[in-house]
Image 1 (cartoon, helix red, strand yellow):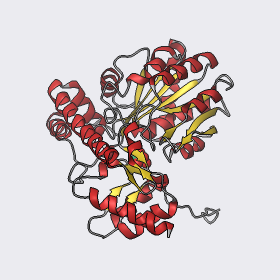
Image 2 (cartoon, rainbow, N blue to C red):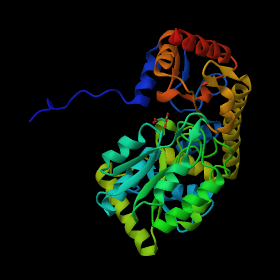
Image 3 (cartoon, protein in one colour):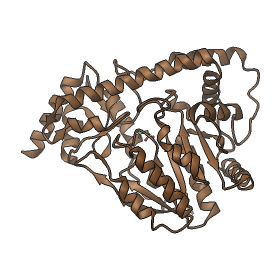
Image 4 (tube, rainbow, N blue to C red):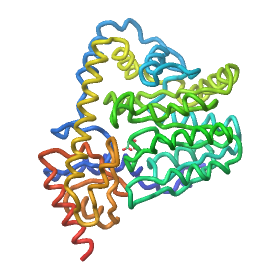
Length: 394
Ligand code: LMR
């Protein structure tokens, strides 16, 4: 046996983009690709609150002995109470970023019901489908695209779920929808909770951008109907974006079974899946988050930094929305969205020209990270957008 049977693979659409941007030597390149926050100078900063927590950890941490497959329990407690506002019978474990939480959740869904089906609305984050498939789940995709309004027709997913067999799962993003920026409205969240209860479905909520959309509390309020009413629930949480800890990979998976015994068995299985996958998550990033959340001063400093990031992204959105139209792109549609992302209705050749001729990088499908724009590059971006569309049409 050898590795000769392994075929070539294309680069991952997002991680490949990071490398392409980094390798581009052109002055003034504009990175609107991967979803990381950038400040007004185009930097992705380490927050002051994070630096303070790190130096405190350096001075006070007395051991780095193993914690176990569930990671840092104190971090999970703090996060449950500050992010989700209480326990509602939810338990959690630390994971390797939000992606690690999604993968554990997917493995659990497969283990608990072989050939488990999971419904998923498209377009969505480029890694959702490959991840769920890698865990052996049967994906039922639903095209929800509504380019005219920039968002998704979530009603179509809801209608399909009303016919779903009992026990099916569905994936749904909580806030700052990736890639459209347009979330379901509050009435729809009630309807998703109704259908999950009626059909005994398991929602897998991807909560990766809390605090970067409308507000810290506001970004989880919409999922309250699920939290309050759906017996079996999984929430994949990421601290990578809201704490700016991307490469530290800080996440958690919150879960709940139909009763205490089931919840305990879910925990046992999640710990076992973690153990055979990576044994235990690394502690540093989670220790930073725990230190910040447990200290009122650090916490309020971090909340102010997060609010400033959110406000900056919202002001870029408002500036663009007021700009009107550039070729096929009607920026007024951006007003309906929140958070880092918006999707520009551009054909592939125009996206290609933006990369090749203007060093303007968008993610696949025309997703743009609004945080990549600032006062120094906005005009150049708009001019490039106009030129790339004109030349693609010629
Ligand atoms: C993104 O969508 O840009 C981020 O979630 C980064 C990633 O891992 O794809």
